[in-house]
Image (cartoon, rainbow, N blue to C red; front, side):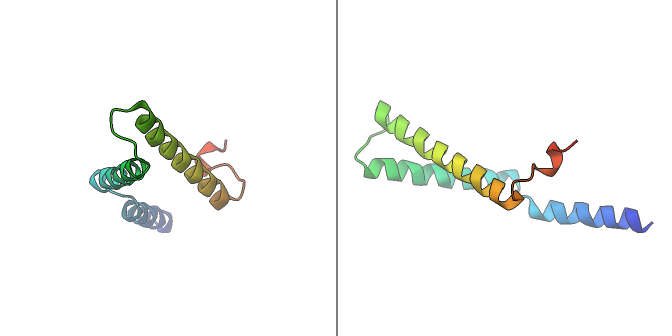
Length: 84
């Protein structure tokens, strides 16, 4: 019985820690708007290939940083779902 209660509590806590799809979409939109503003600050305009490259470069940099942050949190260990 204690095991079931522990599992239920863990599931409830996990549900609290996740973002809703709406929050996730809003966060992505805010990042994209910040990227657009940064590329425009360089004098680039939408529709220009250099503008598209700028957006892609910023997204790639963010992705690499998130991966590095995730790896640092795991301390070099594989994520729990990747262990067999």
